[in-house]
Length: 156
Image (cartoon, rainbow, N blue to C red; front, side, top):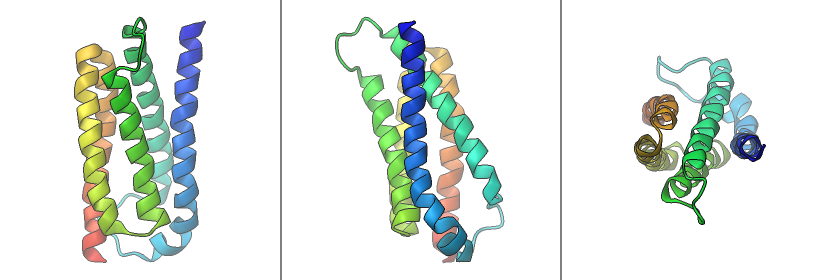
């Protein structure tokens, strides 16, 4: 029962971060973002919500698997801290890109985010192969998002 509770809490945490990011995104997508020039490889807007939903679920399950492996730890572990740090950076990108409307600064931030996600993934692999594998789509998506962020910054 405790394990299921932790999974639900982790899902709530990642979706709270997603909701926070959506708050900043929603105010800009139909206005400022719609007016930006975008690279040819920019996906349609409808793609982002289902991709992020899946990625948030994978992030939560990966963290849950790591937590299960480290359940006896009496304090917060480095993998847990790294996971939380990348989640904060994830929210930060939305605030900077959509909230502040600063694609150049968001590019710097997403490089930090990508580094944090990659480091978290590598550490997760050491704790649980499945947890690490669940983070790989996130690494790939943030890689794509960084290239897209660069393209948007460059053409604007």
